[in-house]
Image (cartoon, one colour):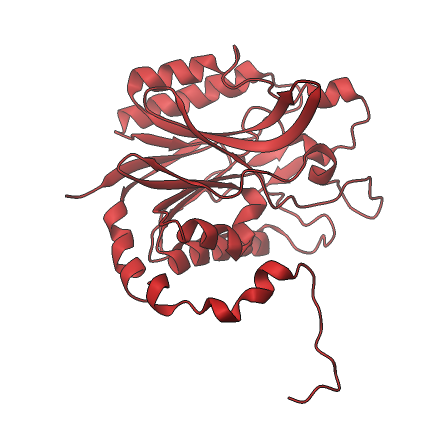
Length: 317
């Protein structure tokens, strides 16, 4: 029996600082409606889909910072998206800034949720690999202050049984780290949902522009898909936000590492593909049959060491 998920990669164009939640949600609902007309049963939205990419600014006013975070999900502003998705019977992935409260304790995460076709949240993920820096850096052409506004995720990389398969989530910079995919791969993941907001220029290396940035993006996603025998759906918030350009190139990648659908613009756009989860089986049972081929006795350094430790130059080869 074929296990096909018809996926809509729902790229968003820019959200300006002046845009409120309603602007974002109305545009997401419009993409959801299109996905419904095209027969999709899963839609993937970008990272921080409800606001502009605020970590590009060094904001000192705590109230302004808090205005970008969601204390509840869903909330009144986002409820129309949940309601319409439930009416259409479409599951979705949504990235947002989460204000997590536990009594007097308040924490801030870059978060995504997987919502089932019944409108209920199936799972939550909090971004683990935060890029950038924690304090203002005058040497950068623009700021990337995720380490100032968020703390690293504390939920790991879980995988959820959903839609007759095993689905996982990650966010933006996570896609560049092979450990992200492998931890999910070791749980049998069959589709990784991934939202991102990636600047089209490197703030520390201005000569690194969108062509090379796009290549690194594609390389990371295609390698993660192939090396773990899984589908990956990577979806951008793209275009020029408040004078800062974001990469587009939202795409759906097969377990063979092939790009089977992608966006062509930097605006609101839906890329659609039929993703048969059974396509994962060949790779999981042959070249990436972990049980047969992995040699964990040689991988200890990966979990015991963070930074680079160079070998003693006098040691024998």
